[in-house]
Image (cartoon, rainbow, N blue to C red; front, top):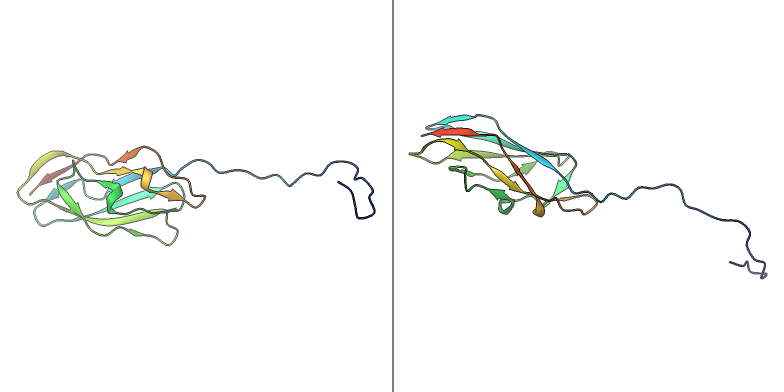
Length: 126
């Protein structure tokens, strides 16, 4: 590189050190009450290792849940998202879980999660 007078530059220039964030978010799922009975609801928490965007009902897997999930709302930091779970009436099942497909969730660097998260087992006796 030359200056305006045509003099060639001397030495090297380098930027300050920086890092590149390429990993997607991870999550855990907690069901507050692990033994649901008639008339009960419980809070489900989706806890992420970093702030996320894009979590919605289409990311939640309820095929083994025996119930429905209300709207999912984030905390101010967007690291814990919660919803109310209502068990299905007239069901008795000791093996239930709630899942999460992480592909629909992104961190602030724009990286999507990969894989799935699953809650611990809970029972439904309605």
